[in-house]
Image (cartoon, rainbow, N blue to C red; front, side, top):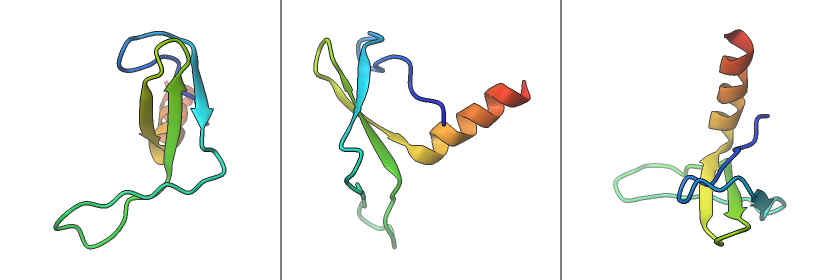
Length: 67
């Protein structure tokens, strides 16, 4: 799995995964199910928190290897 290399908010490259052992599930109105598989990261310099779908990280790795 490829990890994010920078914070999408400020562009700093000092990020770390957080809440790795907790399953995070999001849902929204008019959707008949849950969205799972979210990974949480924190910008160590500015404290920004952001979410990335685990499947996006896996697909990104495949694209890099395929190109």
